[in-house]
Image (cartoon, rainbow, N blue to C red):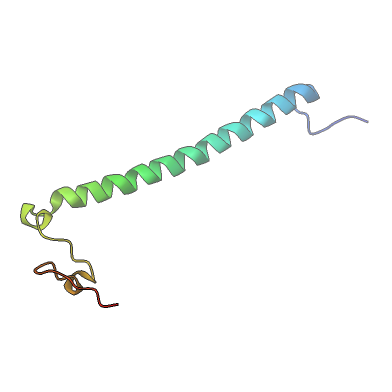
Length: 79
């Protein structure tokens, strides 16, 4: 029985090496896409940070609970 899909006349071992190589290159391509995507995300965030005016970088942090903290006087704990 002849193998009609083997148009290059390669052995099974050579075909296996080729398949494994292609799969490894495919995985490396996927990894490159993920790494470049993460790098671009960080680069965009850094560019937005550089585009902000200098005054906005020196403002206090707008945390939602910052108005509850009173640092002006001593605190008393009632037990």
